[in-house]
Image (cartoon, rainbow, N blue to C red; front, side, top):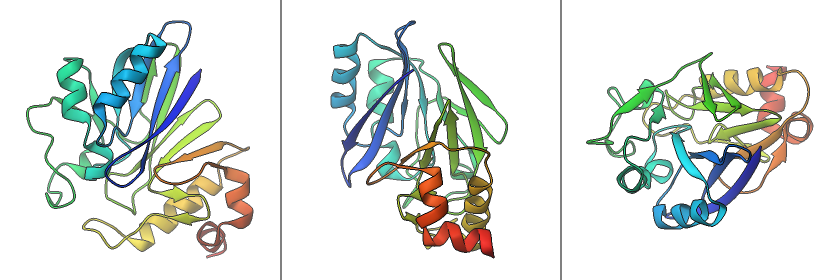
Length: 203
């Protein structure tokens, strides 16, 4: 399993390429606004895109979807329906002309031989998910290093994100944490040092 990270515009979203090195296939997680850069990275590594996985539907995480889909037609685009149905278009731009595949709690997407498990973690948005692959959690804007996602956007909920953080803290073992913005971390570090996660557990 290979993971590559690149920051994409417009506001420094972390986009991840999750690849099965043996099969030379990959998923792109949260392609922000730099589809050309993402495609160049895939070309350099000889990877074929087989899925686009969205941790949630905010524009800074979905901005590259249309151009990726244009370059790699019929690539499935996965999103939780909570960020599509009835979501405010001001922060959830419609992914028009693209066939969406909905995933939810307990679903699994295969990237080559790599299983990616879906955890529904609402709070930052109704459809926020965390994607678990091996020892990595792709946490989107639910959990950041030392912080958590905002809850003041349409569909956000402080109570729900605290419940989601408590649920993540209770996962057995440790994981590498790959958030939607800023630096990487580990789940154990966040259990010990993240004020919001500690408050969620203690509450």
